[in-house]
Image (cartoon, rainbow, N blue to C red; front, side, top):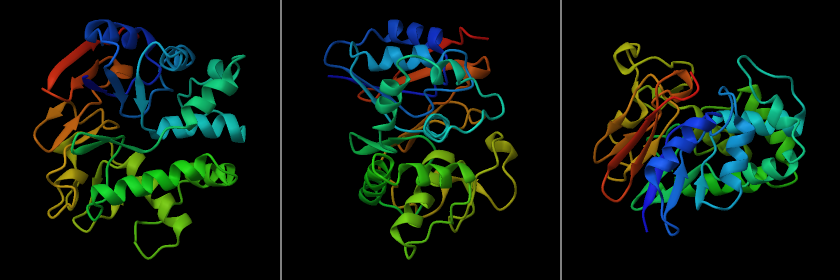
Length: 267
């Protein structure tokens, strides 16, 4: 059994099909998607149908665009900038597809590490990361889902602090799991910066480079940061290679780091 971790698809269905064909997964292999399977690209509906139909063994973690899609569906909010979700929202099988999308966590264990979309706070252990992910997953599948989604899209989550109450801790966790790229050495997140590493403002650094990060030694696979580009070392694997912007769609086989990439078929 092999595990393939896939970067941000963002509705790029033709690229996804090309990548899966290149990987040629066996029946016991698993594809783990590092968030943002929908939006921005032209074919989110086809992507969700393909991934949910059951012919592939699929696991996903939720990214910020996936959460935005859930908010658009359940809260009926208007489209955002460069939003391409209307065909998905208007499809006859939207209810089934959003139920499938909404079941996924924010972090998935892979070997001795994690797959996630954005990042993890430097004070979190792997165990705490999975606990927070599980708590948010329950919240998104419970009676408080709509209010919680409303808080997520309002972008008014607090900075992470372990003394917060459970609800606020989970909101802070969502912000880290889905929007992290850079922070200060004390773990204060700057969720707006999206440029390349060589343009990071003074006083900030990549979330994974904070000294004393408690997940050090655990391999973390992430997406979200297209301007970062591909990176693979013993500690982190960055997988968003900007397919939706005309780059590549990337996957890596976790067992031996074999790389699979296809050029964007959408741009």
